[in-house]
Amino acid sequence: MDAQNYRDRVENALTEADYEPTDVEAFGTVWHKETEDPTIGVTHVCVSVVDAEDIDEESLESTAEEFRGVLSDIAPTQPGGMKNLFGYVLFVESDLSDDLIEFATEEYTVADRRTSVFPLLFELSTETLHLHPIPRLKGRGFYEKQKIDAESLFSV
Image (cartoon, rainbow, N blue to C red; front, side, top):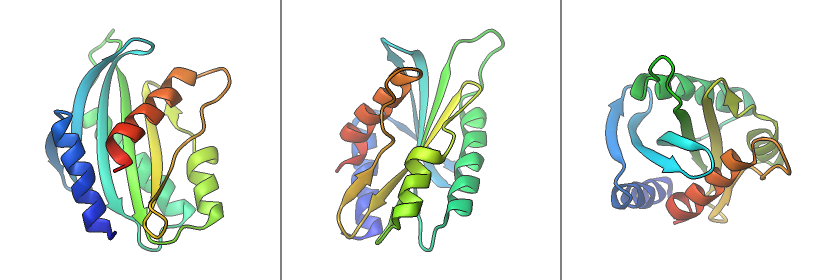
């Protein structure tokens, strides 16, 4: 599978799940949808698939943080509102280093205020989606949502 084929599959899954596309200059198409989660409440989820040719830890982090700003632009929270903003940035690359996988899934700080940005890595050579592990205690619901979303939308 190549990067474009994976992107097409993910976009088809997002369309079938009633996500809406929005053009964002830095990311191309960003897919978004407001959902209600029984554990964590109202969430607004945004998804972008990016080609990750020659990605390193620094560029992954800066891209994920830039996407955090996109979340606030697409789904601004009203004062006193209780909406959780979720962002999934799918980095697609042929071969990923173990160090990059560890940084993206274990070292990157997902939560910042009421936003959670999950950098996910899809390795084309093995067709493997690398997710964040679910912690034993604090924040468990957010990571479980990431796993459920990833299984239904990104493991195509």
